[in-house]
Length: 377
Image (cartoon, rainbow, N blue to C red; front, top):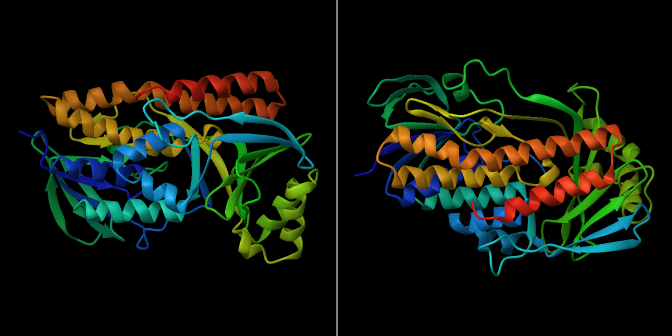
């Protein structure tokens, strides 16, 4: 007999959709509510590491992701003018035979693939809706929705992001994510090379990761004093200023940014924040998933990956345990170390970049973390 028969997932991001797909595979009734009426992902491109590709194969969407996106099996290291200095191979994750070392895709494309799979799995999706009230007892959770409807569930999963509203029902004393002192810049550019490419300037590092057969997304991190609002109309100019020390392909993009139509490059800026919350990740019949408990910066390209893995682990534990409490404790117990590795290693990499620390330390931390993540979940 199943531990739960009816589940509500609050949040239609990557983790929430993956959880819905996995739970429907077990025959569990799933309602998913997403406050955004368009169900549209924000952002430019997203990197999908080898372990994340392995997770997406478990979810059942990796073929679609690779068909729409771009992939690579090595990283080219270039100087600020674009001259190749080294080529570093990327091995697939353990248990990911036949898959490339890494891939990339537009966030909107990934959201569309997962959204179609969520509906195809039989989850009931309601957009433009969230919860107004959660009230739980020993047998279930009563939910009042923002559209005035009501329902009762065996389990509520808060997959509603870094600023989760479900989180206050599980971790009411949590003070919120911490700003890391960096901002992330992204833009869409033509694909020039087969591999992912890192361009090393004197003070700035820029990269281009393929997101399709024809395009890459450019990514740059910079040092910021705070999370002050930056008006979108300023983004192209500020990104161009950040890239002044580059010539070659990055310099060409910079000139295009200044002289062409900024809209075609879809420039995006976000301040970076992160956190990881100690377990347990549930209270009674309300549990947290993804960024609600472990938000990370993009240094290891694994934020989406640990959300995917968290959904898989949660579904597995619900299927194999004899009590709901035991399943939810086991979920956090299995997933915590990998999530903490991503969050803490990414934070250390950011500290080194902000403070001009050792490149050798930066490389060592990155290599060790990525190697550990290649291991089975």
